Length: 407
Image (cartoon, rainbow, N blue to C red; front, top):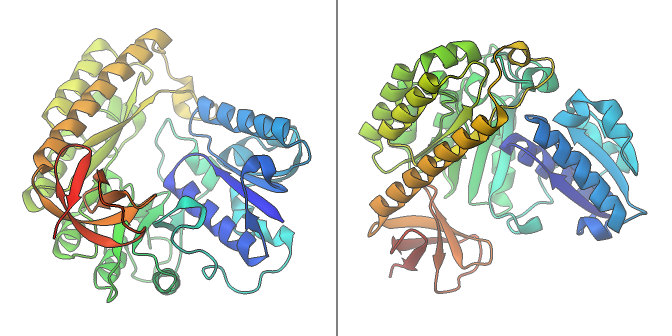
């Protein structure tokens, strides 16, 4: 069986897709391009209306070029709108998020536990993304994810350690730890485990592997966690801390449990111990009721924060969320204009951070075709000397996009 997995959305979906791919390979599947595959799994996102549309368009495009293909649709769009997903051409199964872990069982039994078939370079991936938790118990007014992913559920710490061990044995040198609500890891288990205990365990890992911590809610990035990360060479100096807005009025309307002042102090705390860390963020523009004053508060705060990159999301109504019923709505043209302003600001942040790293010697992992590297603080740079994929090297940062191998 020739298979393809098409993934939309967050790192959690990426981790889920790797799990699916692992299971398909264990059942004799051979990776293929979607236009040549017998089976295509489309792992969907539903965070915005455009994400829903992208999933539908992808299914239709694949069936146009591959009329005999069998398609399985899973993920958040499949969970939120299963009837719509089932009506798409060539769809043979719709699998909600609750059934995603068992999806591959419809293709028969594998030859062993998942985790033995993937290796660096499979399907073009050098690093492994590992999901340790799913679901969310927060109540952000704009977010549909609690209804598509359910309540928070954490994997046992011992099971994570076992998965990491298999990944390291398979040759992975970088592992991204991800979750729907990573900061809540362990709370549902009531066994004393927490994100801090998980990161401390990974930080003491004996093998030469780098762990990259995925998106963290600001209220979950505690001083203890920052200390653990700063004290370990095994944990990448890289944070992603969604701000969402710089106006306290908007944060309250979004039901985000922190203030702009708290966020500013958090970034300052990180910078005090890790001055060269990558610190990215997410921002929503055009939330219902966002005035010129609110937008000015956002831009003013971002101008002052020493962030390194931004992901900008124009607000999109999600039916079923409280925010979808809030008024007044912001005109679409205004939302697009504001998004462009924030993206330009984010580009300046990125250029400023890259410029600050010129001349530094950094440890990096070779990726892609062996002519690119990714540093611990998340700089992706081209190198002139070809090098095999998945190797640790030391580089000197020459400019924003280029590095040389250090002797």
